[in-house]
Image (cartoon, rainbow, N blue to C red):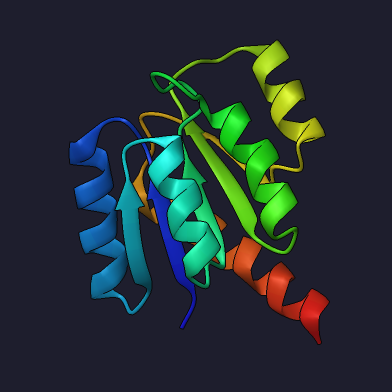
Length: 125
């Protein structure tokens, strides 16, 4: 099963998503900051990152650029409450696979996760 890293400064979102995704079989880990997420990515197999862009210290854009240096095969889905065309364009330039606005329905997120991971699996075959 795929491994999903959840990175959001809102601990409640991290815990809820980790629990919900674990219940349906995904391997999950979460971090509430970019530095801890980078350490985890360097030592663990990660298939997908669910990422908030707005975080204190190092934001999601910083994390995206670092992830691409570590492992370009990791897929990313941005989860953000900020509807900002400039941010969406910057995220796209950094290779984000999908962009979902908060608040979101878990069913929609799950469909998006499955779609992104299916594309990853197809590309690896």
